[in-house]
Length: 249
Image 1 (cartoon, rainbow, N blue to C red):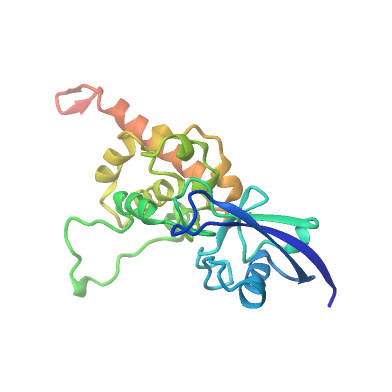
Image 2 (image 1 turned 90 degrees about the vertical axis):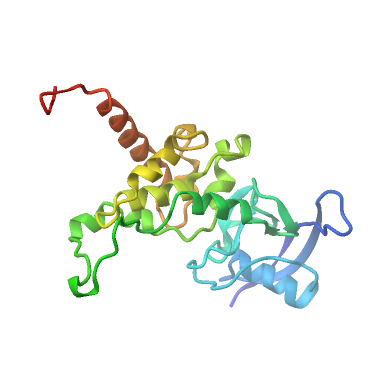
């Protein structure tokens, strides 16, 4: 297997020692089939055990290993080293507080995530003897794409609104909320739409489409947000329809 040498310029930050982040360079041998995560693991295991970075499955499923590579948000377990030249810059995801080195704080994201009620809301629990709620393939297709999110946060790092508007709920959370609004088994759309219409909701989105461009699972959060905008505008317009004689006119 082919082997060459590359220099990785990695952002380092120790909150106990550093006031601001700095960079450290590592010149290492790389294999031809390596991903960026393989290089970071090599540095951690063979060169500098003090390096901190987050990863888990190495299969583009868990979403843990998102980082900025040469300034672009990437899922490092599927980003080939061969895509880059002799020098590769690796930094923590933008728009998140840094815990240490390449590890970012996710608490703020999780609060926004929970705010959109990303679960099926029902007014009354279904009796066991009634069986499961049936759903057709066409009904599933209405939201399946938006259910593929792995919470890698690449969309938050890429989003220009997140960087300028801290209260913006953000692409992944809004797309997931829309996913449940589209689910025929769910009854929570009125609650979610109140959140969507509030400050930091769907109308804060400027439709830059950067979130969909970087999404490794092709979830298209930008598209989900535009659909949610349309749904809320239509609901708003419908609220002005005057009812006469029990009929809308």
